[in-house]
Image (cartoon, rainbow, N blue to C red; front, side):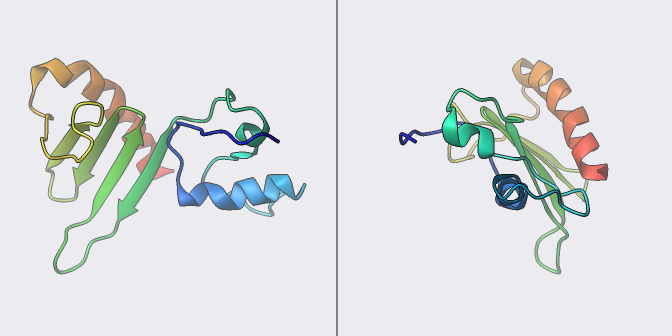
Length: 120
């Protein structure tokens, strides 16, 4: 196969389902993550286009849930705080735009997806 770069969000949790698929195995339980095997041979193959992460929290850092897409990073903290970063304009996540009305449509799309991933 020819080398190529895939510019889609992926996560470490995608490794197990990918290895299982490449080995031709059916896992005995449902695995979190996506099978990345299709993009190994076809760089135009589409993946879910998102990554989910969570932190349970400790005495120093509160718990949080993160949805990362190609363009946005959306975070909800257990404290009720929310953060939204436009990764095209702010790749280092320095400016939280969650209160900016211009990002209302993006927030309306991201919130239910994060809710769904958080409970699954």
